[in-house]
Image (tube, rainbow, N blue to C red):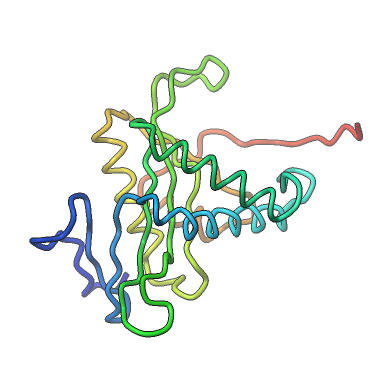
Length: 192
């Protein structure tokens, strides 16, 4: 987001909506609505493919593209009804081609205590994806900042995330937002 972008809600905007501008194009950051599921699912599927390209053995595709899309759409629809889940979308509200397009997506939730992860109740940022057309302009940072605020409002004392080893840009952004390295996932293929 350019320094001139505003994160203040405007009067008359739907509750929870944060208006900003990206190169003078209005972008709305808000909780996803049922009508947003196709756009959010499209970005979630692109995120899965991005991770699969990083390491096809580690990151599953869950069948065909259609299976993955249907599965993720059903998952997001279910999460949308869960008061412990937060699904945010960034919507390009400009005029012309691509208007009212979902150009960013974030999914997080409150997770229960986990002996396996050695965590008390916490917020988890599970997914973050910004359309390639608008990358490098601070939209991911804005989505994460909004997600942190919403998870804090739900009572999260901390937020934990995982990022692909190869995704150095995301890791640098997360560090600038106050995230620190706490665990390293390692994978060993057993050939089964």
